[in-house]
Image 1: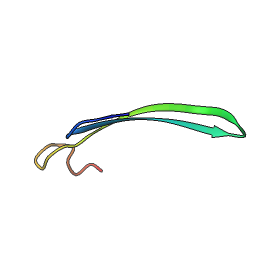
Image 2 (image 1 turned 90 degrees about the vertical axis):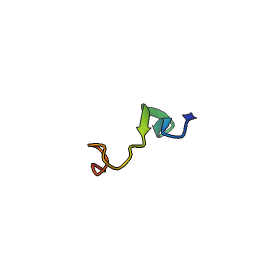
Image 3 (image 1 turned 60 degrees about the vertical axis):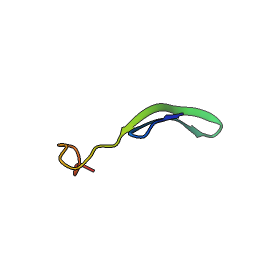
Length: 41
């Protein structure tokens, strides 16, 4: 939905049998080496 150099926001919809079962919005952030979360994923 939206992105910059270091961040992206996405939206998703999960459907089954023509019905919406779930929706979500996620934000993903790029981190550089040295950041505590760098090796977390």
